[in-house]
Length: 462
Image 1 (cartoon, helix red, strand yellow):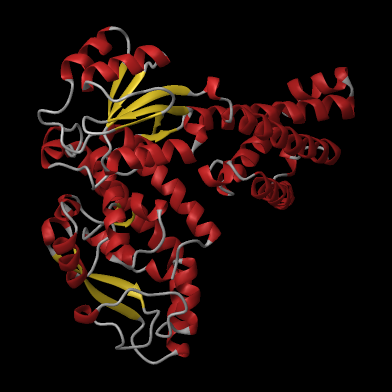
Image 2 (image 1 turned 60 degrees about the vertical axis):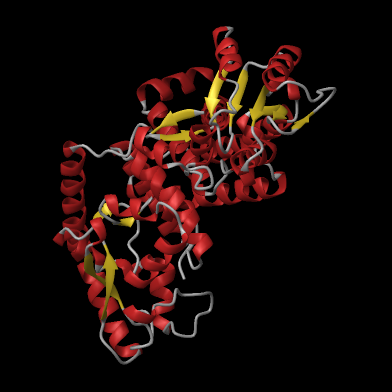
């Protein structure tokens, strides 16, 4: 895994993205040479901003590839869906540059070069992905590893490795002290001796410790011996969070929260988050004020009731504050004491409210909460008190969410859909804990980038 912006990305996926960007650049260079000839092409590239024009097209092309989820694990393994989205990328890039070239004619790429280059780029990317998928099926290109343990964490890791070949990891053996599940001729024997035999026999250079209870059961001496011989010994909890972007609640221990790096926000980071939140809220209010006026009029004309919906939410250290939103439901059907999360085709939602929720425009008044200091722009999403109390009763370590100020958008919001059940909120907590552990400027920038993607594509709203 590669760590970028304090989040983790599979090495193969990052290499795929970089390769496809280079192939797209090569496609436009070839289109330039084919259209203009070698001499004229070299002059255009060197003296007529040719390289800058190509770089802009390649940058937008790569951005559209990301925004259409072409690097998502599910799309990567689905050739048909990937091809459909590639065609959508082709159309989107054409539409975007039709507007861009109208506004900035000096940066316009010749139409013939643009179309030929874009067709070549899509073709090269499609071929590259077929090669990528083929390489993912070859075992010799995957790193062999052994998993120690058969608890929930071990099963979750095994599922990740099986369903996500882009991780480049092949589980040769899963071992535990009370049962051994292995491939080939692995037979049950002494715990430590069996581990060493499996590692040597299969030339394993990586051992993942994913045991539920390690006290008195972990073959420490064997692991230390293997480590001195060059075998990587990894903690399953840390590995799971790097693969999934969330912390496993099933294997979470209080001692890990205490001794694990992270879970500490510096004063400088707090100052940065407050300043950024202040600047973004002021800029957002100034830019969106005309839109907010139009929304207010539409709400007033659509249904009876107040324009602004006020609701009690739980903030940092459990402090209650009033959250502001544009009213999107029928008046008086949703109160703080009997809060019920919105569901699909909810009859309580008004006609204007449905549009506001789909576009997330109902959240705009929260800019006042950010300006007042109730929230940051980025942080765990605040819930109503009765929902928080229910989550505290059923979800361990839930109060850890209160250690930081809540936000209008967060790591959980950009990684999963709307939460409506205890199970949903448990998974949401696992993402929030990852954010609290890894909070940084880079991670905030990544969340903003992902939030823009969600807003533009209208995903996740109810």
